[in-house]
Image 1: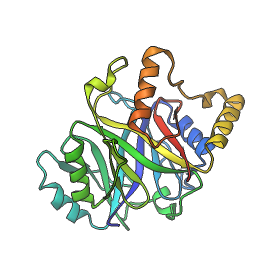
Image 2: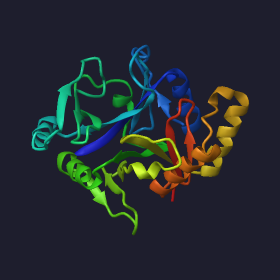
Image 3: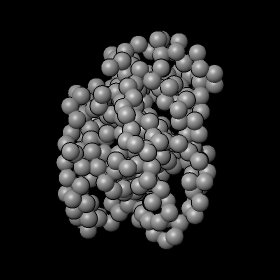
Image 4: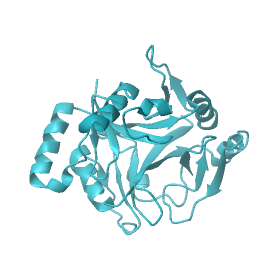
Length: 270
């Protein structure tokens, strides 16, 4: 494939704790290179890097953006220029995973890197393309114009669209390994719950056994209560939000929320 979804980024007030959480629960590995630990901690699943960045003043703690490694960045930039409202800027040289940050026509941000870029380091060199038993399988984006955004990512990144099940309004765009899920956003979806704005919604893991993940999560919390995620589905509004997540992500077997509120979908392999 021309493009590879190579990272997902979270902004967190507890970035060191989250790195331990994703290692303990989902088997991700940190890099042997800790030179950037003061800036961020990155863990990987063999294919995708998860950047966990410390929150700074004026920035929300949230699932923040995703990144793509492409065969040729100039080709992608030429394609972006053909789409009104899409644009890009160069990143500081301290980023070992991206040289360019771009936005789609609805303002969603994604990083761009090119294979064999000089500033690639850490997990982005050590990931060998062989996914771990528990691996990131998708990242989901909610948008007002899902059809247009699907066409944008297919055109600009050459992602391949897979057919959705009958009645499923999502678009599923894949690099052959990881899927970008584009979900329609409507304010009426949030009747009865807190309203989320358009943007990244969640990311997800495929695992060898959902039962085993639940057991290991419970055991981790018994040993270390800081591993306790944010409870899902509590109260009337929480229940409405969880039901919406289940409806919008029919591929998920269950959801968890990490210790800093990021929503994670989990599904069993096969």
